[in-house]
Length: 208
Ligand code: AMP
Image 1: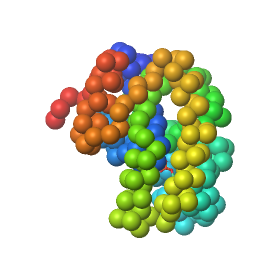
Image 2 (image 1 turned 180 degrees about the vertical axis):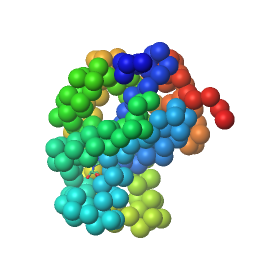
Image 3 (image 1 turned 90 degrees about the vertical axis):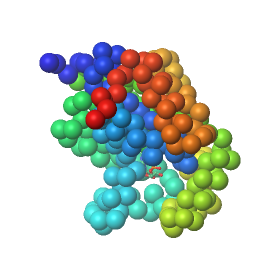
Image 4 (image 1 turned 30 degrees about the horizontal axis):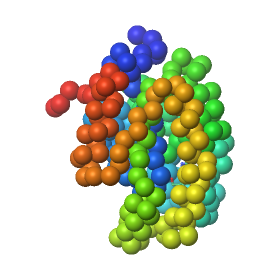
């Protein structure tokens, strides 16, 4: 078999999940990864692990992340490329938190195109800014997340609106965007995402 299989034939779905912080995308990414049998890859999680482990990379990105700013495109892409080159991505993957801006869309295309691969669907979790702020403030309180002060939350949401939302136009032109209402129970939102992906012919793994 070649590596040209695309999701519409039911194999190797390559997916993105996009949404503002507080949209629940991390939680939904993990669920969708499991349902479709593909690894959910979060660049934010990779960075957080490095920070926790106090690696060179972790020390390098700590301040940027704590301010709610974006890590450089080059460094983030290096981290992502290393992750995508691991063996478990052969049956597809779900990227959570990448690409975050137009330059990263180009970097991802530059990685996939020579491999004759493409993103099959972009799940966009739609939640109002007030809902995001509410959820983030609660999570910061509950989990003691130092990167979630009120100022940092506002900064992250502004960056999302300014840098990340424009990438959706690129994917809309490709006809691969599924806008999902992100308000409701976790299960309800997961069901909406699964239905949208199945409507594209992307098959979930058989129930155990
Ligand atoms: P997340 O968990 O996706 O919200 O990511 C946490 C933080 O990691 C972000 O606020 C950024 O500082 C950094 N980060 C994660 N993904 C990226 C990316 N694609 N580009 C730049 N910075 C990123």
